[in-house]
Length: 300
Image 1 (tube, rainbow, N blue to C red):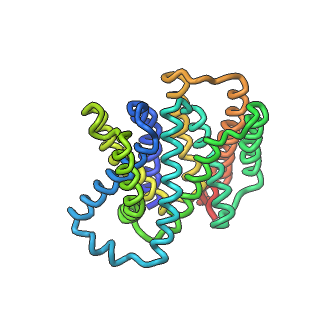
Image 2 (image 1 turned 30 degrees about the vertical axis):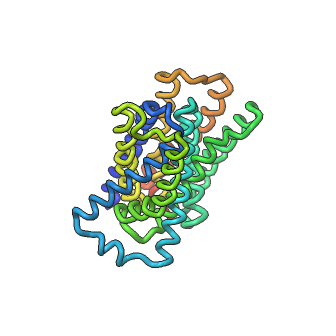
Image 3 (image 1 turned 90 degrees about the horizontal axis):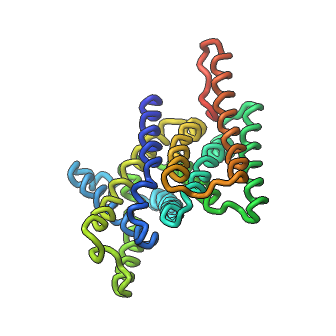
């Protein structure tokens, strides 16, 4: 079960790593409208899938106020995360967005400690401190918090906590989240159309299809992540997640030629060093166990 969860996580993180390429194609469309379309088409896709499997009645039978409350919180967090990320990509902040997902693995470890009482070994506090120092260094030298990075890390980290506590499976859960967001998304898109600023059906056919395709590229990695979150400790998810920001960072610097100064290099290097130390410490601890099963990183 855990091996399957790790495969799900790898699939999700690799797909997310390629996200800048997709959303850059839609750079001329307001991020708020893109999020509206992500919600609408994700819900449509998931609903069709549920109907095809004749599972709608099963989903409705699982709903109660507590479940709706849990998924409403998840829906708010993921919609904020979607908006911030798409806004960052289309406005040329791919590198800073990648920093958020470099920070998130260690933030996930802290959340695992605080919420699920997952244990940390003494040396594991050092990489967390290095990551915090990297954020502090960037803040002092740039004169302001790297708010995009921090907001992405916090919203997605908290979303991971809720998904770990959520009672529904990945398919039902994501369908419910997008369903709860559907009415506001449709209202906003309708308002944009009435104001004459709507993009859908007013741009090229390729852009219209890309907006529709936003549902597919949104739903698939989230379903994979939800499947992983229920099977794998948060600490392990956090370490695997470095694949996503690494790919996004390389795209931002090498493909989109975003600015990366010596100050950025120092700050990022502190965060990267924290990740490397955390990974190395976990590997050493496993080998030192002499073949004895050891809890995964951050696992209680």
